[in-house]
Each structure stands twice: as structure tokens, then as C-alpha cells.
Length: 234
Image 1 (cartoon, rainbow, N blue to C red):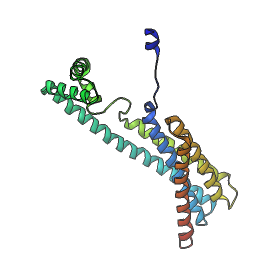
Image 2 (image 1 turned 30 degrees about the horizontal axis):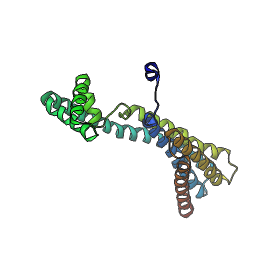
Image 3 (image 1 turned 90 degrees about the horizontal axis):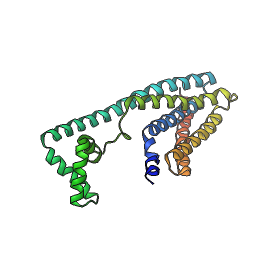
Image 4 (image 1 turned 90 degrees about the vertical axis):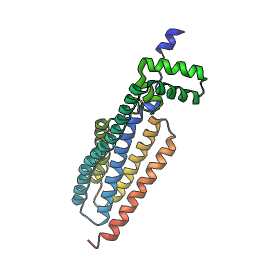
């Protein structure tokens, strides 16, 4: 019985939340923004070569923007986490007993008796006081730890992959069929992405597909209208 318990390893959906969020955001944004840009430019009666050039420019600019934005955002989160840990470390050095009582009070609120909570707090703080407070007081853990470089690379790479699909549809579409080809192809890609991300994250697949395809279709419809209205003016 003991060996079976030791060898049992559980895998949780939350283990994937860090990379999954960045990957889904990057790929989804790559498809939606590039497809919307392409159909908007095409709706203005632009030549297919011009549509392709606009799409490639959008891919490069978007990938760089995603990398920079994600890095800055996650770096700010990491800075906040480090500041909280530094403050907690100082408090443990100055008032360890108060921190012990604070940790025990947290366990009491979670349902432990005062005696058991005191014992748990003592044992955890003896093992690693900072880790115990980081996890149970601050809500920080390795699973949700901010990783700026990883997030930036994942967002940029997945954006580029997502943005490549509308460009492929532009290349493959017959003359005059850019808008329907890009729209239908991109919506199918979004549906696949929404279903896949929901499946990997343990969410409802139908809801994931419906949500991402509706928003993608709305974005492309708006940019098509903009290109149609303002194209002749330009």
C-alpha cells in the first residue's frame, strides 16, 4: 500500500496554466489580428501582393509587440513577487513569533483546530519558513511563478505560427477570393485552437470553440467594413 502511494503521481490542469495561457493568447492573437488586417486591406480593393505585404508586416510587428508586451507584463509581476518575498523574509527575521501566529491563524480559517494549526505552522516553518508563508499567506507557488522570458518567447513564437495561417490562405486563394478564403480558413483554425486549448485545459470544448470563433468573426467583419468604407476614399 505504501509503495503504491509513493509511486502515484497526479497531473493537474493547473500545472499547464503558465505556458498554456501564453501559447493560446499568442496563437489566437496571431490568427485574429493578421486575418483581420488582411481582409480589411483586401476589402479596400488592394492587389493581392499588397495584401500579402501588409500581412507579413503585421506578423513581424505583432510578434515583436507580443514578446515585448508579455515580457514587460510578466516582469512586473515577477518584481512584485520578489518584493513581497523580500518583505516576508524581513518580517520572519524581525518577528518570527508573530509570523508563526499569522500562519497558524490561516490554517484555523481553513478548518484546522487551533492545536493542530499550531503544530502544522511550527513544522512547516521549521522546514522552510519563507516557502510556507509564500505559499499560504501570499499565494505564491512554483506552478504560478512568473517567468518573463518563457512567456515572451512562447507568445512571440505562437503569434508567428498563428499569423502564418492567414498568409498561407492569401497565397493559396484565387484572385478575387482572398476575403472568403482567409475568413473561412482562419475561422476553422480558430475553432481548432479553441477546442484544443479547452481540451488541454480541462474546460468545455464547445464553449471554447464558440467563444473564439465568434470573436474572430466579429473582428474580421469589422475590419472588412472599415476597408469597404474607407478604401475608396484612400
